[in-house]
Amino acid sequence: MFKQMRVWFVLTIVLSLLALGSACSKSGTNEAGPDTNSTAPTGKTPPKGGEGTVTGAIAYNGAAPAPKKIDTSADPVCGSSNPNLSTEDTVVKDGKLANVFVYIKDGATADGTKITEYTFPTPTEAVTLDQKGCHYVPHVMGLQANQKLKITNSDPTQHNIHPTPKSNPEWNQTQPNGAPPIEKTFARAEVLIPVKCNQHPWMKSYIGVLKHPFYAVSAEDGTFTIKGVPPGTYTVAAWFEKGGPNGTEKTMQVTVPANGSGKADFAFGEAATASSRGGLQMMPALEVPMIGRH
Image 1 (cartoon, rainbow, N blue to C red):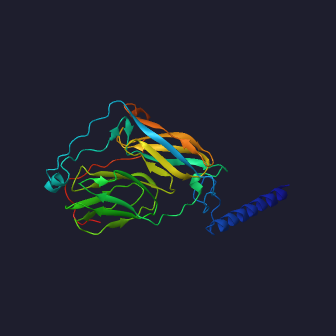
Image 2: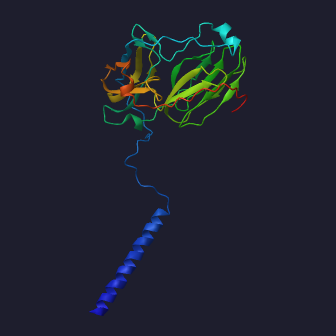
Image 3: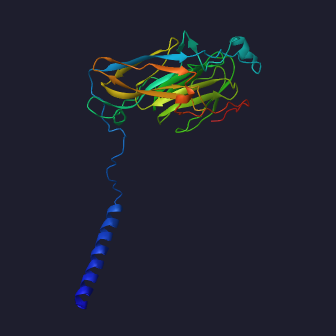
């Protein structure tokens, strides 16, 4: 009996060593198993035909704060080129809010494929961010990952462009008046990237970077339209820079029918802070010029 127990004991050890060796050999091949939680693009494009839109308007509840006149005495050129320069963080007209970044955050097309699993071509045309009248134009903008961003200086003075992203490399570059455009790209999606000017601390802009083209910025009358959306049900998000240190983001579910339009109306204002979900840390602008730093 003891002999039989010894045989079983030795056999158990041998089988364990064989199993361990097999496992080590497999891990050494660097072959990764399937990631069931991955939402990485699959390389396929969304089906063509039946595209619709997401439309809506952004309201502002309550009394909008009055724009504040900006002291430009530190650079007389700014005062002469734009004597009425004022803050533009809350631009309200007839109860409608401009400069809100609206985008498809999540969701799936009609066949159940998540929008994040599709691959979208990078646009070949550049998106321009201008410095004119000592403020950024536009104040809020969007582009796709790896799409070219062209920064121009239309002012007769020097600027210092300084984006402060979290997921992309930070950079800081001086652009004298008359200098050629600066061209950059952001490889990773990020909503939103603050941009400041180290020489004019009131200058601020925000850039939304997405993997897809489904975004828009509300106009002066608060309206927006996201075009070319495949039929499906999506989470649509609207981001407004005020309402807290991280801004305010609100979401809603929207269904886009084939060849139709889904409606997404949002409201910000006095109650916006309570529903803030964050998403952006705004860095304070520095008043000391940082010349030539890249």
